[in-house]
Length: 179
Image (tube, helix red, strand yellow):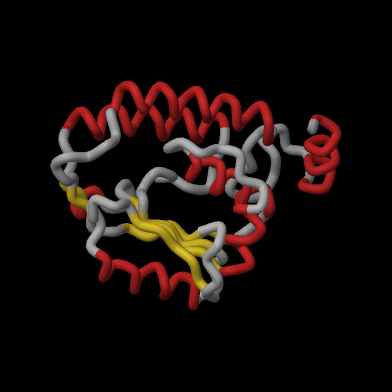
């Protein structure tokens, strides 16, 4: 992503859990004015085939991400995302996280910048041989989320306001003062 040069840039999980033809749904969202379009496994659970333990741990991770980092997106971890070039450039220039929680950082920064994020339900099927170890990697991701919160400050609400109710301008000044 850091060296891509197209007008739209995206990534998908290597295991092919989301059929690539779902890209048309993300492209339509960008055509409709979104800066970022992301696949979601939670908006329509009937499209998802995942084991129970994965759903269980996913629920808790989503709660942690919502509480600490991202308020406008329900599924930050679906590995199917598409960006307008300018959005990708703005976000990747500041990227800190290299682990599995990098998506949380990208979407947290996007939310704080006021970028329009479209979350689109996609078909998703768990594939055998996944490299993600749900418990061990989940704990590392949770630690990354806590570190990101300390670096980036509180999440924005769906209305763009800081959770304290301060205006966006006042929140931006306070955020800069903290960093």
